[in-house]
Every structure is written in structure tokens, then in C-alpha cells.
Picture (cartoon, protein in one colour):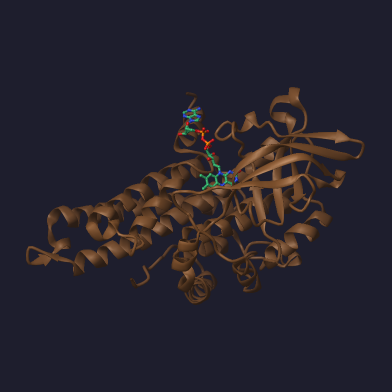
Length: 388
Ligand SMILES: Cc1cc2nc3c(=O)[nH]c(=O)nc-3n(C[C@H](O)[C@H](O)[C@H](O)COP(=O)(O)OP(=O)(O)OC[C@H]3O[C@@H](n4cnc5c(N)ncnc54)[C@H](O)[C@@H]3O)c2cc1C
């Protein structure tokens, strides 16, 4: 199903951003999109995707040039997030976002020069794949309940624990891991570590089967007496909880940007279908109920995009807009789910078939309201900000 590209206009995209978008779109449509169906069916995609994206300079658009990045602003990485939906495989987009916007930003922000050279530089090249290890069987929304421990032993750390739902976990070369380093210290009792996944004691105990994002791998990780050198600590000891809360802002924003871009693409498909599919002697889009449905979808997507662009603008300016990002994460997830649900209705029986990607968008989009901080967690943050 081929659909004309929607015009994305905004005051903050410069001609350079527009040119970047053209390049990225052409790259994705040539190098990734043709394989989407195959990867979705296989429930996996090959590691060369990272190398290819890295080779094209797309894994470090907003990272400094000294580490192999392009030195661009955050808006240039927004362009990548928006265009990644054209890969046609949500799992690939998610895996790449884990690499660019979740596991590696803490390395740049908190890492030593040596850690940046060892992990960030190859991650930007795409020769090393990263994962992010926060969630545990008993610590999802309740991050502070993390039970994985890292205990000092001489100059080393010995890590024991279990992580779950780890995207890229089956293929990653390293993990940005959060562990408990000091039990009584509450929020000050956590620290970040950079873990090479060939460290003895690191085991991928299970590859998890899932509803959507099927081409991405999702792992359960077991760490048994895993010994790390002292310099595996990322940033200051005891600051891990705050570092992860910082990381989650970028994670939520990239997810929100992807959700809006995915909704837009799906909307374009719905619009085209409503014009070409006939029933009772006319295009189904001519029925008022259908036309109004599409009008409402367009309005919701614009509103969601406005929220995202506002947060991106502030994030790019160096602000820490937790309120705006929480609203983006919440609203784009709800809207994204409504759009995919409406698309299922507009396409009728065809939507229910595996031949069309509508069912896939419906399945993939459901994650947005759960992963990286569920709707309820976003509402809780926003309520607390209002003294509730
Ligand atoms: C496909 C996929 C990929 C993922 N990738 C990663 C990854 O790469 N790295 C990683 O670390 N994690 C990852 N996650 C984990 C994800 O971030 C968590 O699933 C998410 O944070 C929710 O945690 P949970 O699943 O344990 O749900 P729970 O915390 O058990 O929540 C269950 C329900 O209870 C609600 N709830 C919880 N607390 C409250 C409250 N205080 N008030 C009201 N309602 C509440 C939740 O909102 C939710 O609806 C991934 C998850 C999935 C499904």
C-alpha cells in the first residue's frame, strides 16, 4: 500500500532538517522497508540494520562529532524518529530508539572519556548494540523496587539479579544497567553500570514472545555473581535513580514522536482507503459518519503533534520539561490507540487480515500505553505536579 507523504511543516524545521528528512526517507524506503514483512514474520531482524544505519550516520545525529556523531540538534534526531515509521516495522524503530535515545544518552551525559570511547563511539557506528536494563519482574512502574544488587568486592562489583522486557537484550553487546548499590539509602541507593554482555554471569534466560513489535527481540536477563570492574560504574555512585529518571524523559519523548508519526502515516492510509473503497454506490468516506471520524482523527493527531513539538522545542533548548513530556507520552499513546482502533473500523474485514499492516499497527501501538511509564504513571506525575 503506497501513500503520498504527508506534508510536515513547522516553524522549527530548518531547510537543513528538511534536506535530512529527504535523505533519511530515501534511505529507509530503500534499505529497510523492503524487508519489513520478512522481519515481522520471522520475529527478528538482522544486526546489519544497526551497522547500515550507523554507516549512514543515522545513529548519532545529535551526538557530538568527536564521538562520531553529526553534531546536530535534537530536532534532527526528531526527524529520524518521525521517518523511522516508514521502515514499516515498529520493532525495528523501537530497537533503534533504544540504541539512540535510551541506552546511550546516559553514556554521553555521565560517562568517562574512556567509557565514551569504549561504548558510545561503536554504538554510534552501529558496530556495538546497546540495551537498557531497568525493569525487573517486581519492578516495572515501581522502579524504586529494583532488587538487582551490585555489591563491592575489593575494587570490583558483584551483580546478582534479574531483568525483564529488555529490548535488544538477546543481541546487545552492552547494557546500561541500573542496580541497587546501597539498600538503606532509598532513592540514593541505586547506581548505573555499563555491562559488556560477554561478562561471565550474564545470561539471556528467555526470549519473550509478544503481541506486537514482533521484529524486535525482548529478553529476560539473569545475572549470577557477575563480576564487574570498578570502572564499570557509570556516573556517580548512588545517583542511579535520578539518572534513570532523566533518561526516561528522552525515552518518553522519542516514543511520543514515533507514536504521532505512526498515527499520521496510518491516517493517510485510512484517508486514501476511504476515498477508494465503495459501498452502496459511493466511497465510504462520503458517509458522514466516516468523514467525521476522519476529521476527528486528523484533529487529534495535530493536537498530539503540537504537544510533542512544544516539548521537543523545550528539550532542544536544554530545558527539562517533565510536565510536557509526561503529557506527550500520555496523550500520544491514547490518541495512537484511538487512531489504530479507528483504522481497524475503516478498513473493515480487510483490517483483520494479516495481509495488511493495519492489524500490526493496532497491535504495535498498544505498547505505547504501557512501556516506558504506563498511562497511570504519567497521570500520577501530572497529578502530583498539581499538588494532588
Ligand atoms: C515490548 C516491551 C519492551 C520493553 N523494553 C524495555 C527495555 O528495553 N528496558 C526496560 O528496562 N524495560 C522495558 N520494558 C518494560 C516497561 O517499561 C514496563 O513494562 C513498564 O514500565 C510497566 O511495568 P510493568 O510491566 O511491570 O507493569 P506494572 O508496573 O506491574 O503495572 C501494571 C499496571 O498497574 C498500573 N499501576 C502501577 N502502579 C500504579 C499506580 N501507582 N497507580 C495506578 N496504577 C498503577 C500500571 O499503570 C499498569 O497499568 C518493555 C516492556 C515491553 C512490554
